[in-house]
Image (tube, rainbow, N blue to C red; front, side, top):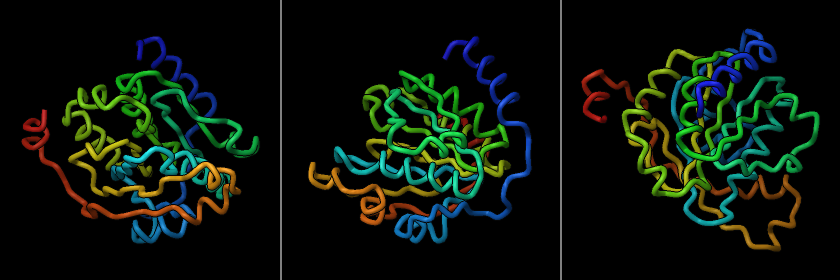
Amino acid sequence: MAAGKIVNLRKLLAERFPQEPLPSGDQLVTGLRGFDEALAGGLTKGAVTELSSAAPNAGSATLIAALLQRAWRDRYFMALIDGRDSFDLESVGAPALRHLLWVRCHEASEAMQAADLLVRDGNFSLVILDLVLNPAAELRKIPQSNWYRLQRLVEPAPTAFLVLTGESMISSAQWKLALENQWTLPQLDCEAADLQTQLKIRVQRAQLNKWSEREIARAG
């Protein structure tokens, strides 16, 4: 992401999202029963949660829409860093969009720079980094030290950081989940609320880790 774009993003944050107290608590309840149960109550604030979905049409778009509806219902702001500019605005109603900052990227490197800024901004209860459609070869170029840095940045923040990937790749993620749906065309015609109740989540890791400077240096 060019330096000018980062400057513009900072200006937008200052103008549109003035600093306000965020909801208290260590977890962000999503309202998706299977998702919250897998996460022992909700997304952990100050932590990286990775949700991988290897199968096509696994339901990540359904999940994003549901999380945005929850942000609108509970009146908090959510940021979506869209790694391949693929978010469908029509998947959610116009009122919910008022609670969304949508950062449109075309490459993983741009998305990572945006994440670096947003996870420490302090105005977002939830930041989602969607890399599901980015090529695997592109994602493998991201040094693990970058993920450790994002973890260190989000730790003191009142923010849950959810990273969506096509395959599990973040070794420092405290929560690693797998989305195991594979929607068929007839299923995709169902109401969004019905699809949300059918999301299948499997826990791969549930462990809060603190990383030392030595571990971060070794990861790079």
